[in-house]
Image (cartoon, rainbow, N blue to C red; front, side):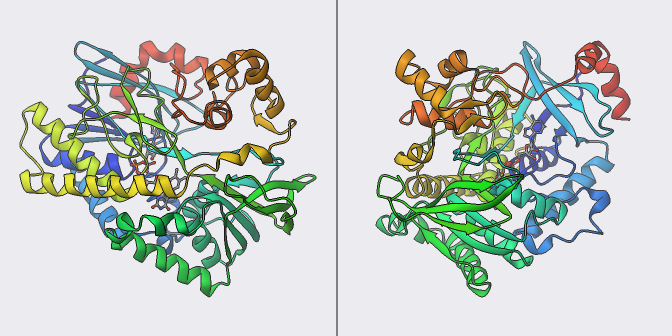
Length: 482
Ligand SMILES: Cc1cc2nc3c(=O)[nH]c(=O)nc-3n(C[C@H](O)[C@H](O)[C@H](O)COP(=O)(O)OP(=O)(O)OC[C@H]3O[C@@H](n4cnc5c(N)ncnc54)[C@H](O)[C@@H]3O)c2cc1C
């Protein structure tokens, strides 16, 4: 298994792209790995290259000029043999030794065929982003109930609207682009239920006023929604979904100040699809087993602790983007550039970007992190959310563990975090390994502590065949990069 690059970057979203392009500009050889079929991550999610001419999604995007410039830089570096781009490669484990890191991935370009790949480098940059945080409710496991991110991924990644009459719920500004995107594609968005009230931002308007780009973006979404007659209901939540084979209606209720549904306010709305999201959970699967120190991000999540140059507490390991805290694409881009600056400095390579651009990136990071903290304060998980759970609401869908079983684990056995609940009830032991239910179980039993995922040695399900192939992985690596 030879060393294949000076740096492996895992994740080709805004953070990973900015880091890869900057380190390439500094003269390093880089391997950029992503489980998706196109670069861009969640923010610039695109259809796979072979389908792009047939599916137009440009109207759903922002900042495409930056995205195109990053792609051009990648193409140039690839043509010069300096970039090893690995799309449809899912990294399932990383190990560290004295010489650096071995990154184990499964190559799914010819799925269902899977091939083991191992990449080595003295330095590793993890930019694996985040995913939708879910709070279960009765009926959330019906077909047609998706995450808001899932609805958007279908739209941006395939030009597909998941329904004709859709309700959205949860909290946070992300509800707005999804509602606007669906409405502009002809979907009837019957309600956008935002659990927070507008006064949350008005009480502390500073971070919003200092970020005119954010309120301008919000205003654009507001105009689109107004044009399509989409109504936004503040202090309201989707508290149940009903249907037989799939969702046919949702129940919507006004929320009391503690976030519990106000009695007598519940009403039924007919839909054929639902999208729900309660902010995001950083994807720390690869970082936790490497022993990185974590820190509280203030939005209910633990995130990886980094210094001002995005170095983690593990030598040679850097992190950028939403694994360091959820705060939007602009923050991720700036953190990617800062991380790249540190990689180049630690490698003894040309200082790209120069001092001025690094200072500008640091200022952006400071401003965007302040905005992210304000966003977390304005859009918290409502403390009374668990009141809409019935005892038979399923929390862990893989192992079919109910809210009643989790409550009993807490009340009868004293379970005080999701790990103990897992040992007592099997919640989090199934196929998704707690990625979906972990944050929800945590919010139920330990709402005042930040959620950190359990250490998992395998970050994505892999076949026994891939494990058996590991000895050949070095050979596969050389074959597929030629
Ligand atoms: C579903 C979803 C939709 C979003 N849409 C918007 C939006 O429309 N507008 C907005 O402002 N913000 C949006 N966000 C927030 C958005 O994630 C960020 O602002 C921005 O994309 C973060 O950039 P990033 O580089 O940190 O991570 P991401 O963009 O999430 O990129 C991370 C990349 O890492 C890859 N990855 C993760 N794990 C592995 C692994 N084990 N192996 C290989 N590759 C891996 C992923 O495939 C992904 O491409 C969205 C977030 C989510 C979760």
